[in-house]
Length: 561
Image (cartoon, rainbow, N blue to C red; front, top):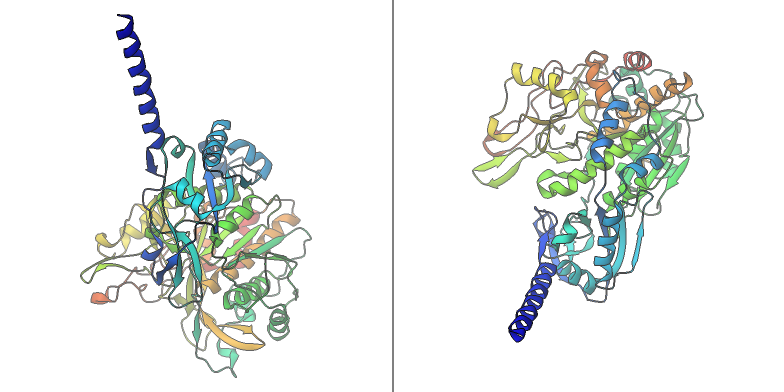
C-alpha cells in the first residue's frame, strides 16, 4: 500500500510537471491579423538574416485605466463640458495608465528567459525598446527573420518572415510588438505638376491662401504659442529654401525665416513633403514658433511612425499642433496595433495637442480582391476617431481664387474598424440620409467617417533646391489648416484661455464656421466599371468634411468657448 501511494504521488508529480511544461510551451498569436512584409505592395524578400545580427523591437505593454483616461479625454475636449480645456500633464497621464507591477515583472521575466537584457522604457513605462540578436528574437517569438527590399525605392528593412507568437501567460500583458511586420510607407505621395514656372500668379501660394481664408495680415504675437510638422523616411527640409520661399512669397505679412527647433536628423537629400510642410505651416501660422520633428530615417530596424509616437509619449513639453502626412491602409494593420495607436493619440490630445493628418490622395480608395470583386479602401491614421483628418479642395477656375470645389483625389470614407464617434453621428447621418450613396457593399456606413475638414490641395508653389516647383495633394492642405488653427490658439492664449487641443468636438459643434464645399466631381475609387467614390453635398461629406476654414468665423467661435 505504501508503495502504491508512493507511485501515485510520483505519477501525480510527473503529470503536474508535464502539464506545467506544456502550458509554458503553449504560444498564441499576439496580433490576430499579421500582415507579413511580402504581402505589402512593392516589398519583396531579399535574404535571410544572420543569427548574430541585431534587431530592435518595441513592446507595447498593457496599460491600466484606459477607460478612465478616455472619459477624461472626452470631458476636456468637449466645449460644452465644464472640464473643457483642463488638459493633463504627461506625468499625470503616466501615473494613471502605467502598466501594473505584474505586467512589468511577467514581461521582464519572459525576456530574461532567452537572455534579453538590453531594454529601456519611456516615462509612462508602457513601452519597452529592446535590442537583441536575431537568434534571440527568433527563439523568443517562434519566428524567423529576413531582409526585404522595396521594388522602386532604395529601402531595405529587417523584419520577421512569419507570424510571431508569445506564451499564453504573456499575451494578456502586451498589446503588440513593433519591428516585426510593418514596413515604411515610402515614397512621396505628392503629385508634381507640369506648370509654367514663369507665371506663378495662377497657382497657389501664401497670399492666395491668406486671402481665400480671410487670414489677411493676421500673424501671431504671442511668446508661448507653438506648432510642428512631423516627418518620416528621410524627409528633410532646407533652411536655405525656407528663406528663399519667404523672400519670394512672404512680402505681404510678417513672418519668421527660420525654424525654431529641429528634433531628429535633418541632413540629407531635401524632401518635397518636408519643404512643403515647413513653408506653408510657417506662412499660414506666421510668426508662430515652429518645430521640425524628424524621425529615424530609413533605418532597417525601425518603424518610423512608431518611433515618432514613442518620442512624443516621452517628451514632457510638446508643440500645440502637429501637421502629419503619413498613413497606411487599414487592412494592412492589426486591430491590436491600431487600437493602441489610438490610445497614444488620446494621450496626446489629453495633453492639449491638436494632431492633424492628411486624408490621403486616393479618394475613396480601392482594394481589389480579384478582377470582379473590390471594395473601398480606408486609411489609418486618417480613420482614427482621435485625430483631425484634413481633405483637399481646388479652385473652380484656373484664374480665380474665390470659389472652391472638391478635389477628387481627396481621401475620405468610412473606417472598417472604428465605430462612429458620438461627436459626428448627427452630421454624418445628414449626409447618409439625403445623398445618393455608392452601393452599400463598398463601405461601412456605421463606422468612423472622414475627413473632418479640408483646405486647398492643388497647384501649390514650393521652393526646392532654390527652384520653383508646383505640387498637389492633401499633404498641402494639412499644414495650411494647422497654421490657421495655430493663429487661433495664439488669440486664445493672449486671453488666458488654453489652446484648443483635440479639435473634433469643436468642429462638429460649429458646422457653420467653414466654407461649405458643394461643387466638384465624386471622389476617385475603382477604375474597374468606372466606379466612383462619394459625392459632395451640403454640410458634411466624405470628400471635404465640413469644408474649408473661414478664419474670422473660426476665431469668433473659438473665443466663445
